[in-house]
Image: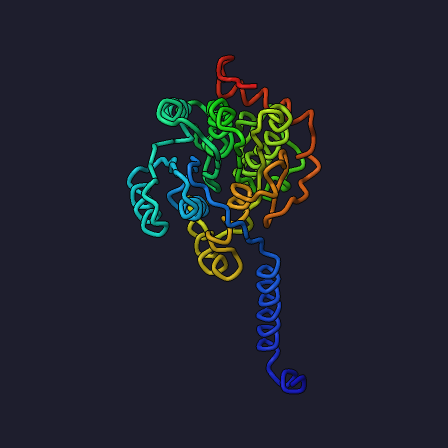
Length: 328
């Protein structure tokens, strides 16, 4: 066999080598992939999932609906959400699935959504802050905030604070932030440039937003430790989703080839989120960062308690959090 391979043209040898290496990578990724094995049912439980009309959010909704939960899809696009709702009901055979409009790029929308939830829902057992966006040009929202930072961090930050009272009332309950290993791609977090006031780089903004989710998880956990509410964050893995829908065309072309080969499917990427939502073994774990259904290491910066506190205070200012909206 070796002599046969050596007799092949050099370019063919290189090609086979590349295919072999990539194949080994794919096998490794499959073998190390975390899978939620819990069979826990969620009858009588209410779940809110942001960005649940596609990708990881939709797959999470399907799974939790199959477990009997009352699932609220918090989505910006009501038409897409309605289609997703029908899909989720059909696959889960659970008609207890509802759509509520939520545009995280609008603080007014976040407050309206939260007010409607507090008025209509008697309990909230699981809040999954899943929605996110990446690789977009600089654009300010109606609130004067950078759209990527607001969609990924500020919007979810406000939403969590507004619903924290109901989560406490429903304890034991869980808050889950879908972050990313991208949080470790930045070695600094310039609080003076948190909203791209001084300079803008789309990659840096994304790293900042994901680091902010980890830091705020760290900060919030001890504040609510005695309330019966846990808060954790996670890296779903490299997942083939629509998060790069606003990327340049050249990036989409590369992604179309590489993503199916080496990235997780949306269902596979949802496993850690589902694990944190239902597994009994994490019921009393809080303030942690997970990957492949187990606790994982974060960057050194993500463990900076002082930075986490300052970020929380700055975030309160950006979203204009009122005293009566604080629940700890």
